[in-house]
Every structure is written in C-alpha cells, then in structure tokens.
Length: 256
Image 1 (cartoon, one colour):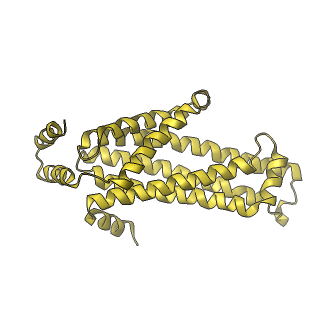
Image 2 (cartoon, one colour):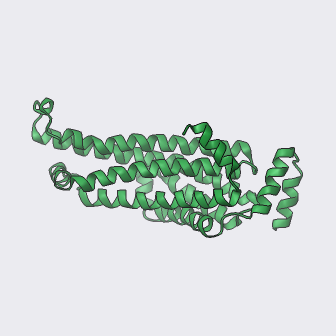
Image 3 (cartoon, one colour):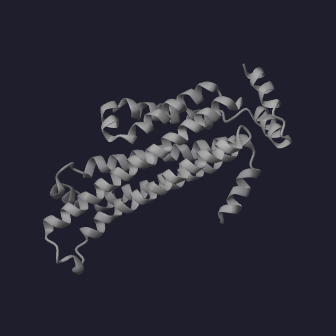
C-alpha cells in the first residue's frame, strides 16, 4: 500500500477510531522499546568488548529479537505520527505538520540506529574477508557499533522531544482531549530534550526518563480507553474547514 493511499484511508477514519488506533500503535512502541532495552541490558557489557561479543554469539536469537524490536518501534511510531497529524490538523495544521516533520526525522535516525544494531552480527559472523582483522579488533568494532547505535538513539530522542512539545501544545488547545495530557506531554518533551547534552541526560536520569514515560504513557492510556470527544473534534474540523478563526475561541470558552 502506497503512502498516499494509507494517508487517504486514515483521513476517512472516524476521529475516535483514529485516536484508539494511535493508542494501540503507541502501546506497541512502548512494549517493543522495553524488549529492545532488556536485550541490550542483558547482552551489552559497557566497556568490555570481549564479554559483549561473547554474549552476542551465545545468544544470537535474543540479539536478533532486539533488532526486530527496534524495527517495530520505528514502524509503530511512524503510524502514530500519521494518525496524530490527522487528529490535530483541525487544531493547527501548520504545527501539526511541523510536529510530524520532527517525528519523522527522529524515526529516520532510529532506522539508522537499527543498522548499527545489526552491524555486530556482520562483524562477528566470521566471514573470510574479516580474517585480516584480529579477534580483539572485531570485538572492539562490534562494541563500537553498539555505542553508535546508542548515540543515534539519543539523537532521535531530541527530535521526539520537540515532537512531544508540539503535540503537548496541540493537545492543550484541542478541546477534544483533557488539557492535563497536554501538560504531561510538554514535560515529556523537556525530558527527551535533555538528551541534547548526554552529560545533562545522565545527571537528570532517571527523572527525565520518568517524565517522558509518564507523559507519553498517560496519553497512550487515554487514547486506548476513551479516545477523543468526537463532537468537539468535528466542531474544530468544521471550523478549520470553513476558515472560521473565531470558532476555536468559542469552543475553548466552552471547554473552560
């Protein structure tokens, strides 16, 4: 299915179904990210290339599971991005598009991180062309690729931080979702933006991680259980379609 066809079908879906579908993909993102984190925590030994290489070779299926989980995270977050763009376009089309841009850039960087994840399997695979390297050198290369994967992942979090900030603002202004979710998403954005500086992120850990998980997790649960206020979403969509700039203010006043 082409991207254009997928976007057309998303646009035709009811807002409540869009919201709940986004919640499902968001939940899958959390679960897959948890699996990937578990795999890396289990197999990667910081600063010890030999032990890391031994763990990967001894538990190759588990390592490949972590790679698959990374791919699922990227794919599911792309789906969330597309659905959120359609959901929040009636609130502010320009900001919704900008948010989608930041998220997709983060997803592209996440895809690059997936390549760094699978690279150690190639390096440690024992290919004939690798015989020019010593075993210690191959082990060091494998650990280097995993460190590059971690750095790429941290960079992607910065873009997701900007994404969460914009989504938080759109949620706060939406009227069809509780404003507290917008506030929590804003906190999530600041939590991920801490990765602009690895030293700052390490200093703030685990509080910055908790802010990100709480913000995005709360929105995920709300979308799964309740969805959106469909009547108010349609009012915003109608006002946006008619170019009526006074209507959103009226709806905001009702929501207060």
